[in-house]
Length: 247
Ligand code: IPE
Ligand code: IPE
Ligand code: MG
Image 1 (cartoon, rainbow, N blue to C red):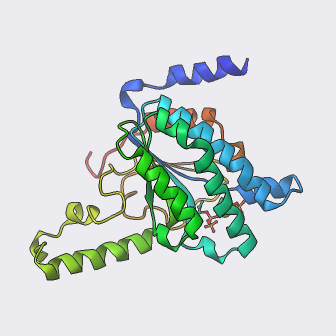
Image 2: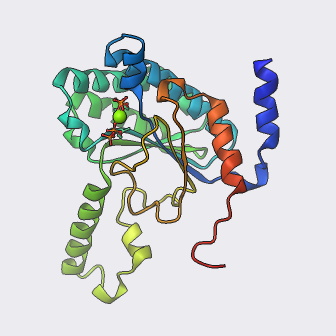
Image 3: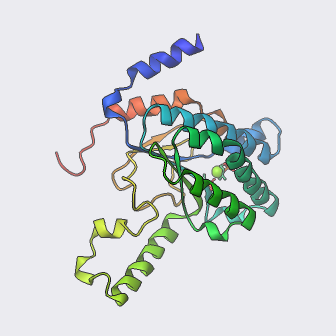
C-alpha cells in the first residue's frame, strides 16, 4: 500500500521541471527525541538515517545539488556533549556512506569553516572530498560550521583582498561576481528550500542565495522526514509561479 502511494507521488512529479538545487534545514531532532522520552542525541542518530534516505531519493530524481544544513555557526552554543555527539555522528555518517556516495557518482562538498571543527572530523571530511572530487552526479553540499552572515563577511574580506592585489576592479563588483566569493560559487541558487520541524525561519542559512528560492515548511520533525515528504515538496514547488520580479 505504502509503495503504491509513493509511486503515485513520483508519478505526479514533472521530471522535466525538477528543481536543480534543493536545500534542507534538517531540524527537529531534539523535539523528536523528547516526544519519545529519549535523549536529544537519539534524535540526531535517527536524523542521520534520514540523511541517507533523502540523499538517495534526491539523487534518483537527478537533482543537481542537495544542500543540507548539518551544523550552524550558532550550534556551538549547545552543551559540549551534544556538540561532541553531533561531530561523532558526522564521522560515522561519512565512514558508513562514503563508498555508497562514491558508487552513486555523488560529489561531496562543504560550506562553512570546517577547519574550526575537531581534527578528527576535518580528516574524515577531507578523505570524502578527495575521494568524490571527480564525480559528475549530484553535488551533496553539507553546511558544517556554516552561517550565512559569516559567509557574506568572508566574501567581503576576500573581495577586498583581491581588489588590493589588483585581481579585481571595484567597478566590476556586482551581485554575480559577489556570488562567486560564496562557498556555493560553483552551484546554482537553491530553487527550493525545505524546513521541517514547524519553525518558520532561516536560522542563518544561505542568506544571499535564497533571494528567489521557494520555501516549503512542514510541521514534521526531521527524523520523521521521508522521501514522500521530499516528493510532496517538489510537487508543491512545481505548482508555484516564480516571477523573479517580472509579471
Ligand atoms: C537539528 O535538530 C539538528 C541540528 C541543529 C544539528 P535540533 O537539534 O535543532 O532539534 P530541535 O530543533 O531542538 O528539536
Ligand atoms: C538550524 O537549526 C541549524 C541546523 C539545522 C543545522 P537550529 O535548531 O539551530 O535553529 P534555531 O536555533 O531553532 O533557529
Ligand atoms: Mg532546532
